[in-house]
Figure 1 (spheres, one colour):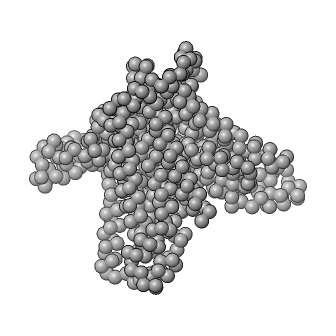
Figure 2: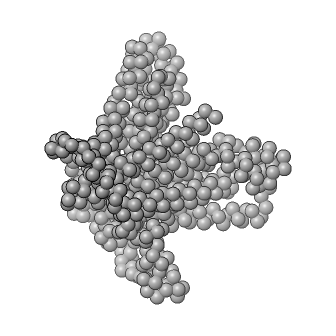
Figure 3: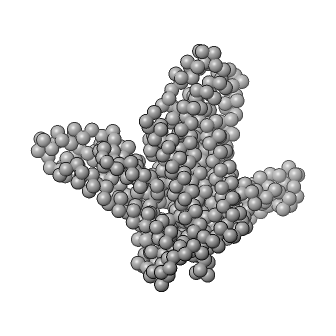
Length: 273
Length: 285
């Protein structure tokens, strides 16, 4: 501590923290209220009637919200699993080895995390049309790799730079096969990194909008696309319910991983969520 | 197996995907922006798309609007994020719950924030209702236009909401790894609170703030769904304009859309340059 806090500085701190947190939570409040509201017109501060209509609609089999939820989970999970399978080896190369041209490889992998999707997706769209990948789920999963794979690779590179390869060579010298060495030595020590990185890669894919809109061509309707169309059509109650469903995985993942968030490599990915 | 082959094999899948999809997408966009597409019979590249883009007022309005959105959002977010990090770095009662609440919107997608901002700040939104309750306005139209407005206030509010925790968490981690020793030394040598912050702490955290700000700037310049949700119809943010051009019924507008995509890519290349400059410096230092 640099100096003893006075009563004045303590109350200043308390008030500013309260304002900050209020500002950060505030935009979620009207969404939550709308999902239970009926006939909430200007200038009512609170809804005149409360109702479960929006939730009943959103959770019914006919509305297409649940269908869209499963589709979004499928797309994000597929993009995540592919990113783990491809990103873990690449992260190992970047984290454990020094080699010529490494800076350029890192630049190639960093670029997609900074360049906005709209800048690349128009070009991809005109290629995907000719090979029949537009308006398809595999096409959407593929373009989701553009933000998720570099993120996974960079996270794993950080994990592998703290990994001691001596354990592997000891296991090998004691007669373990490469596969056994990986399963019993390497995997247990990198697993926490894979899980945290994978959960965030899932969220990066979960929040994609323009990539899905362009390549899905209005046929592959993920939750954000559905949310956007309800929000612009003025169905605020249903928008509120879908919005609440849409943010749930992120909040669950945050609760599970809050203590891992101090590391820069993990947070870096949030620039794209 | 030599290390060289091993490295190559480990990197090959990731690099091929990134090169094919990301750089392939950029490259095809570049070719199409030159009106070059042999598959559909366009074999003579030209600069027509760029001429028509750079001669249209709409493009300049959109570019300036997007630049204004990105610049203003980044400056406000970074400043408030530093302030938030200064508040949250000390120990206090309930710190872990406050930290959780501070991070909560890190995982909330921008689109949800945009809809929240719409419901708060539109002319029939929560604040307009409060103003009516307090007798400041009688009709929604009397409430100031804060969304769909020409100054992009709603869009900037959304980005500030979303990016304070993003930059804040990075700065906070940065401050915690620095500790308070440097500041204690400055204070014991007679520097006051402001001087300690301005000449000791700020220079130490600045590279981290800058590299986070570069990511925020590139994102806020190039994001589509937030200006599409909260922006005015004209002028539209550059990504919205590019999307409209691309999906125009007139296929001749597509090269123009590609030219705009290339402008966005070039600006992000500048951002990557700054990002590398400041992160590399930090790693070496």
